[in-house]
Image (cartoon, rainbow, N blue to C red; front, side, top):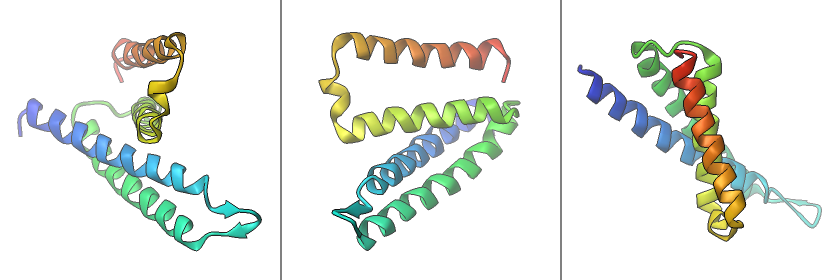
Length: 120
């Protein structure tokens, strides 16, 4: 498999997994309502986390093929996509002040810097 195919797999598994994790976090925030445990929200949160974790495991296989083996860098990639996914999923990112959106962009670029500068 060539590098382009591997990067496409990494991107797809990471985006799907981060979406799952973001769903998990979004539903987890609704598990308790007025002191009552909401089973449906707990189920949806768990399903999101399961999808996210399985996709994370798959992405790690291909990240390792690309010589990105340190758990710190793998986790940085993962949590960045999850946080971005949650911000977009909630729709709140578009309501942030411009300065907050710019800071988010710089944080994303900083993570990219770490990824490439440290060599993964």
